Image (tube, rainbow, N blue to C red; front, side, top):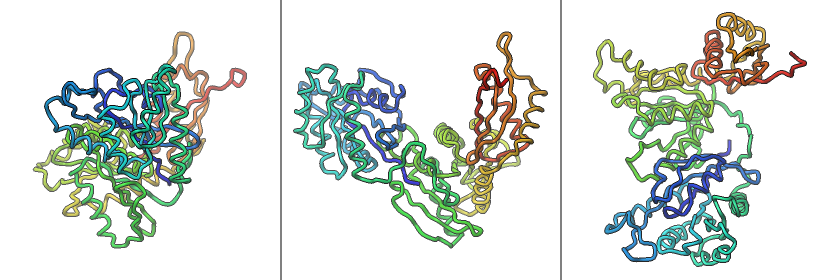
Length: 461
């Protein structure tokens, strides 16, 4: 499966990157405020334009030190030049990871020294750059856009991220730059290739992810081919396992907030996101010495959001001080913190010593096979009737939800379609109840399942 290209929004603080991000992804995900530095958490989502689906990354404001009294004085950095190395770190992260860079500037302020500093770094790259001259809320500012050609970057497009003016023109330029790079970008709704099991090993740095990868590959000793460059800073290793091709997708790791430069963190997360999207099953490696963290919860949530299989691997178990109750207590902690994936199998291993390492691929393949289980329509409706008798559907006033029948309409991941009288009467708790009844009969270990509800016309009822 071709990876989705990355479009990064870069620029100094308070030029409207978050407003543009919200406009591109079609929802208000980024917090917008006049105070520079409001964007702190990583933000990434998908957008679609001119036949190309791509990731949009909001990199946050690149801080530039400017002395007091200058045109673009920066009070956050006043009295310190320590921000200058961070400028280069963030800009270089964008350059390294992005396929096309959109540099956002403030058309009302004109070219500032901070813009020139960022542009100097971008000019030294081979990546195409589109300059979005933002805040052109009035036509009188549009002619001022030509000033930004002095930065020596790509095409300059005046836009208003708040009102949407010029954003389509900017996306036309971005799409043309992407098409010039490759004609093989995935299109909206494109299906993945069926080329055997693909496993993404994800987790925080230092959880033992790389050690696990090396142990899995080293023990099998049957590497077919290393394929580099499918996702940046990742290596796809294809091996033969029990006569089947298995592709293991390595990732750079999802770092915890605040530990490194925010832009670098964003792009490391994007690499892991891309690996998850390309995989059938994700192996979430948790550090047994640290326990389940908030970042582990975020990663697991993204796996389920993309309807991928999930295997939880607790690593470094040999280094944990244990008694007869330690494993059960740790398991309870996992089920509590990751309560939204109670069906995910958990394995306690030591990637360093090889303890229980053989269970990892076995479990991942079992989860992969569960994605293709098909429940016969007759059995599904037996499950449905028993569920309805055990617990009647909810009602609103005089109307009660009626579920007429159901069928499984697809696999990978399993999707069940139920015909009802009124979807508005359905509560998410009853949907969860129906899912649990299905899992009672068909556990679908490690595999998320989807339930869809379609209203029947009144004459059909």
